[in-house]
Length: 115
Length: 116
Image (cartoon, rainbow over all chains, first blue to last red; front, side):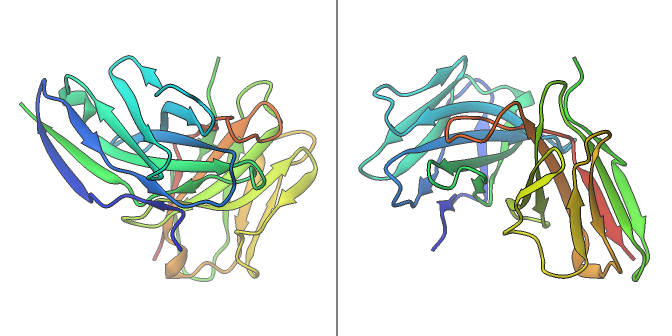
């Protein structure tokens, strides 16, 4: 079974609007961390935001917030007030407590911000 | 404060040649991870190393691939007798301490290997 599923291969959003990128995960470990990374066309992986499985509140970092619904095993990334520079691939990733040596990545969502 | 440095950024090899990919972790980081990204896919874990030790190589192909992280110098991912299917982006990541579920890894810009 896939550990991380991102069902949106591509998304479009109008500049200045908000957009939600979906991510669901699968783990039997009660303790885990969820991450979002951005990969612009230049190729580097940029860490955006982190959510721990025991965190009571949704994580926020500037214009990024993580909509964490533990019962549904979803960790959607919300980008508010989209900017042209947000156009990139976005990857959801998970790290488990008992198997913390590795990140599991989803297949990514390509976001295009339209002017 | 330089980030994770990978070189070369782009590497072209003919089938059967060897490819050597280098990764210098962030200053103060002693833990290195290698990931592979095939076209249109997410990153897949290959190997986790500390200085002079391979901790987890469960994602490494059994043949032709090897990795090291010597006491001095960068980490090296070596692919012998490359084949077309090895064409991918190879990312290195580092962290300052042993991995933990809430430790983000800092990634390099990747090496794009093309086998012709």
